[in-house]
Length: 400
Image 1 (cartoon, rainbow, N blue to C red):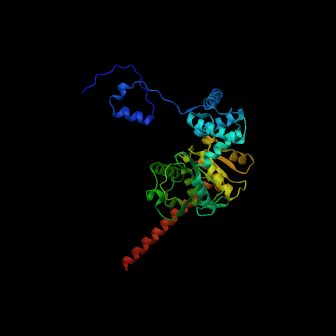
Image 2 (image 1 turned 135 degrees about the horizontal axis):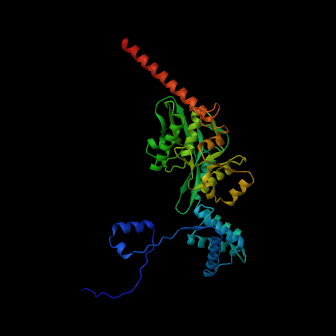
Image 3 (image 1 turned 90 degrees about the vertical axis):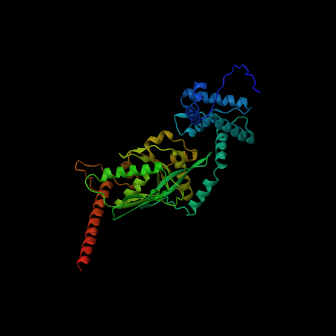
């Protein structure tokens, strides 16, 4: 049996992710013929006067539709802040309105439980806190391991060749920051820079690219006039899964510089930021989670008023931190530094001038870069001396 076609005048609209659209467009020849009009929906909107007005109107409309309590002005302000937090941008708002509606419903629940007639800012903050609490079991367990010393992280003092790096652990609907110790060692040899994770294939392509960029930057700064004959290794300590991303490349650079120059680095500062071959520090993702992760660690071990995080200067617009961290910064209990170049960063971490390159290719005496260049020269001479001694010993044995 072959059914007769039924006349139909309908309009079909497909909604989906860009990836699915691209795949259908590439692999189904009829798809472009049937669906000729495409419209992209942005997941963000501007956080300007008009954007905030539209957000407030959405909150009011959602409350009426779902029979929720009216939100006070400061409560709507907290919802707007949450929208910026979702996209990590002070100048943008998220259009993931399902998540906003979920927040409104939870804030309404806490207002109802308190017996309040209207939803206040404190109820919105409580809803956000409870949402985190339901998902942060792994974060708390890692924090416990850090506090008891199983995961080793220093939050005071200064050490040579050791820096606190920061990473983000993503659990799907929740992500948090975690500090990790990054170390570097230096010795006589000709292996050059060796990344332990890369050598044993525990790093991804982006991380490997970041390390190769680090090598290029290091060679340009210190290998223009003299050959680089040394051996250094860089390692992410107590990391047992594959690592990827280049946001720790500046941290690796600082650990390397400290190891070669013999200058201690502050352990009360954690670092994040990727670098390019010209020594500029590039913005990274997850900056809020990283700052908050180190703050929680420092708070657990005891705030000294000197601790903080060094971030790329271009990440300032992405700061949408929790109120507790903002208050700690305001009181001077915690700090956020920014750097646009690796030289600016090394000065913050060591308290020693980095030193700008001079016309003859050298660096001013007493600076970090000068000490690195001098140490590299010493390592080169020591290697050639040892090599010559080995060669002479071999010739004597042959004659005997």
